[in-house]
Length: 311
Image (cartoon, rainbow, N blue to C red; front, side):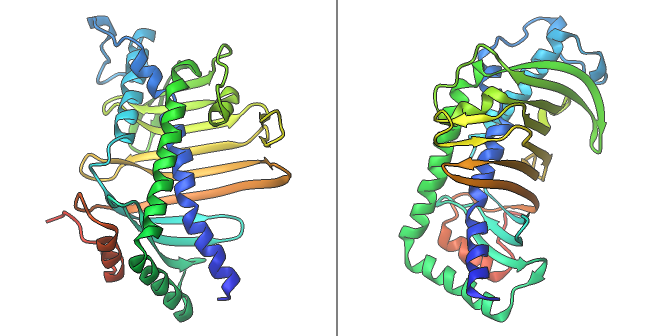
């Protein structure tokens, strides 16, 4: 594999945190709205355990409030780090990597390209990259700062979500895990985005599926109904018709994670046209000890089987 292809793989690996940031924004869409609305406090507002299709409007509102509040709570919970396998597909590249979450930020090791094991040269380059990371803590610190900045932007978006969307109960549907309740969402026409990070919310609509028993979001589908301009179109634009899908599932130990992410969007960044066509699947989740350092994570990745809390 040539050096150009190696650089492409490294860039794709590094961009994963950006996509997870986008996924976070979408999964907690409306979570602050849930927290800002009064929860039901009467018997008629309780959520039935067995017949989700019979929800009254008030009961449906309680359910979406609880589910979205759970997503917000979990999004801010860093007490359950995990290792997992990420397979990412773009028009140019298919990669698989192992990721370990640590107190110092995520650490990743590339394990395959185009669903084939790394060549001997690529394996040596990956080992050299990890050696460099070990000898230069500032590199990992920079990554952690980038992840913290993503979180800060997410919280910035969360602060305006109470005003950004309307949710409407749309009945029940079947899923592989059982019956889930569907809600549609659309922009609040009275919402005015205060900054660039929240601009796309003004033109996004879609639906959310909620597990009524566990009060967790299982799927989110969102799409852009109109073009979205940034800085009056000077800084960029997202084109109408772009869409995103996120699937969540319980992955063990009562922990839920994103297991599938798909995005197809196009637009312009300043003067350059960009197409975002990405699919991610995450699997093999295992807990790692709380407080694991990035150096320990590298040791786990090199051992080929990250240490877990499983007995």
